[in-house]
Image (cartoon, rainbow, N blue to C red; front, side, top):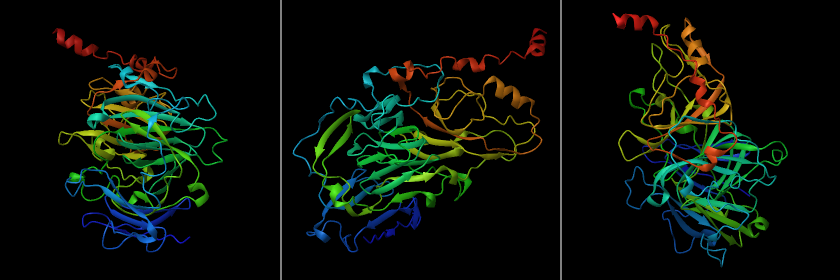
Length: 471
C-alpha cells in the first residue's frame, strides 16, 4: 500500500518534514497543522466535511480545545475513517470487570492523603503477574485537583511485561506525558504509530485512543518501567525562551508526530475492548472492530514524541548554579501568569564551567512549587542512592538539597576547570499544586523510610561564628 504524508504549517509554526525511525514514518514540528493520508486522494481538499468523503470514509472532528479558544491555542484534528467512533458496539460503557482495576492507577481518589515529609522511592519492582500490561501495571503515586473541574494533575509509575493486545484506552480526563525508563514502547494511536525508547518521551492528548505494545523480543527479557504525568487542564507547550533568544532548549523541529496507519483487514474485524478513563475511573465497552481505522487526517491535535538527547541545554559560564527552569522541555500553563500547572524539566549531560567559588551541585532549597523527580539512566549529581526507576517528592516548602556526601565533596572541590557531567539523565515534574499521596505510595515496600537520613551528617560548622556572636 502506498503511503503519502503531506504537511503544512501556520505562519508562526516550524515547517514540517518527513523522517523515518525504526521503520516508522513521522512528521516533524511543534504546533504545526499536519496532514497525512495512506491512500492518494483520501484527504478531502478545500473543505473539512464534504457530503461524500473520498473512498466512502466518514469525517469526524476531534476537538482538543473549545471551538472559540484563541487561534494560537486552538487545537483540533479532522479524521477520515472507515467507520466513525460511535460504531462498533451495541453496548454502552460500564464499570470495568474484575480483570481490570476500578480506578486508573489502582487507588480510589478518596484514599489519597497529605504528607509534607521528603519522600523517596527505590526502583519500582517487577510485576508480580506474568500478564501485566501498561494499564494493569499502573500505580498512581500522587494527585492534585480533580479531572471533573479540569484542573490538576497526577503522577503515576508503570511496570509491564506484556502487550495490551486487543485492549485499547482513551483518556477523557487529560493529557498523558509518558517517560519510559526501561524497554521501548510501541504505541499505536488512532493517528498512527510511535516507537518510544528510553531517553525519549511521548505525549498522548486527551481523547485519542491508543494501546501500548512491547516488542516481542522484550516480552521475554525483563519488564518495561516508566513514569506518567497527567494534566487535567490545557496541553503541553514549549516554554518561552525570553532573553535566551530564538534557539535552544527543545527545538520545535525535533518533535515527531505519527502518520496515518490502518491495521490489516483481518485484525480490523476482530472484537476488542475499549477503555475510557473518566473521572479517574475505568469504564469499558466491547467493539466489533479496531479503532485504528483512520485512513487520512489533518489538524494540529495529535500525539508526538521527542528525544531528550536532542535537548540544547543553557547554563551559567561565569558563576552560580542557575534555577532548574532553564532545563524545561515542556510546560503546561496554569491559571497564574508565569506559573505552570506542570513543567517537565530534565537534567541532561552538560558542561559545568562556573568559577572556582561556585557550589556546582543544586543548592539547598524550599520551593513554593512541588518537585517530583525520577531517574532514567545513571546517577543524579546531587544524591547518592537515587537509582534509575526510583523517584522522590519534595512538596511545597519541604526543605531539600544535596545529601551530606555530595555537599562535602563539592565544598572540597576547588573547581579549577570546567567539568562535564555525563553520569546520568534525571528529570523533574514540577507543579504549583499541592500533592496528595496514594496509600500505595506511602505503604509500598520500596518507599525509602530512611531517605531523610541522607542529610544527618550536615554538621554545625559555625563554631568560630558562635564565638563572635558571644562577643
